[in-house]
Image 1 (cartoon, rainbow, N blue to C red):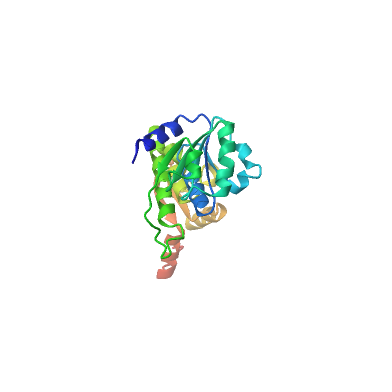
Image 2: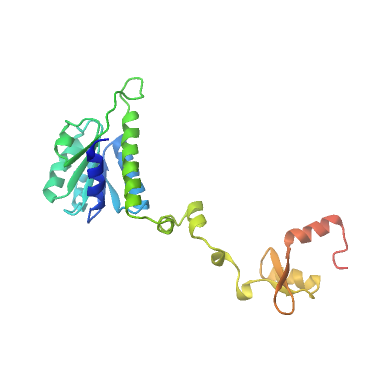
Length: 237
């Protein structure tokens, strides 16, 4: 790793706008993933497809932004067409490339060199090792920025409200528990019919049993009812 990596982190951390990650082809897919990782870990970022940038979308870039350009050869026409425009806008450009003397590198303020001897492809053509290296660099930048920003677990959770991750970090008992009239409760002196009626009316799979002071003394579930019936016991005795 050269000092350029540390300088890249400083540049991204000091960015007053957003990080715009751009690329085309397989490198574009990697750029999209890097942008997504940055967004979810506290760095304002977005993905710009280089081809779309040629047809108006480069207008999303402002002078206070930092552009992270991803390209193995650094000679993609779409990418190299928009880079001079980006420089005129005033945004700084960081290049992730395996060719430090490429056209893309010449149009960049900072070069993150990812040397690749050959691709895993048997023809040494399909981007494999090069895209993996670019992804590693992007993820590393995102993680260092995450630490430097003191990004907290609760902030991470706020960015992931969906799926198991969001539920594990955000959902509390208070969010799903039944309260008031929605909570099935019976006194310990209540009969079986009252218990079943309460469970049915509240559409719950269990009922809380309390004493006269409303202290919880037990819980009866629909599983308990089924087990009694399976044994053939006189349920209402």
